[in-house]
Amino acid sequence: MTTFTARYPGRCAAACGQPIEPGDTVHYVDDELVHVDCQPPAPEKPAVVCTTCWLTQPCDCEDA
Image 1: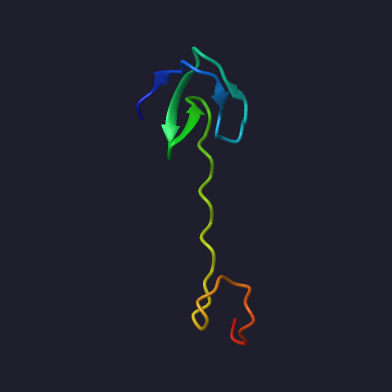
Image 2 (image 1 turned 120 degrees about the vertical axis):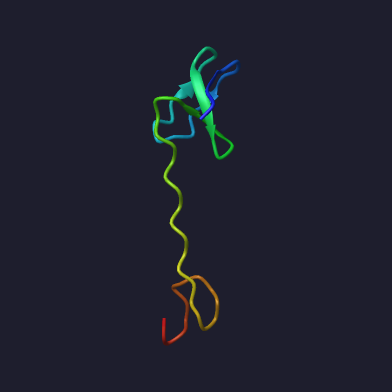
């Protein structure tokens, strides 16, 4: 993890959602700026895909 000092204002992508002020120590997590002390956002859970119609569930298939 490479940290650096923010030069521009922004918003933390982690759950805190607090502003990032110039001078704060930050790093990137998946192209999103996050305070060093914050946890990165939790990854999204992958959608369940029906093996009959290949749509994300819930679908209209009987075996879903």
